[in-house]
Length: 136
Image (cartoon, rainbow, N blue to C red; front, side, top):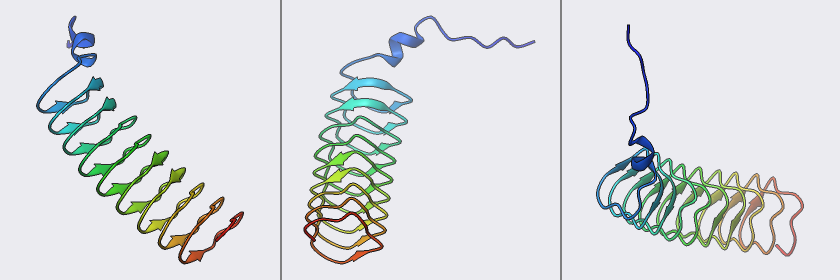
């Protein structure tokens, strides 16, 4: 019979700060450098971030991230993102995006192609299937 339990130091591992290297399944991590998988509440990361949320000032590829500010790179399936540069797919609540925005809503000051968007203000480009749009 196998009994599963959490190691005594599990919470210490989960709440570590200032970690450098590969971080898998981590949360509440600040100033990480390296590969971050399944992490959230991470600030000032540099590297590849997969399945991360509440990330600020990331530089690189961000997949499945939300609550991201000032990102540079490819953003897929992100929402609540501000000041992104790159390709944004299925992203709502995005402000000041520059590039192609597909299936986004609540977007302000976008430049590019917007499909199936609503609640968009000050857009420049092609708007398809959008409603509640001002100053297009």
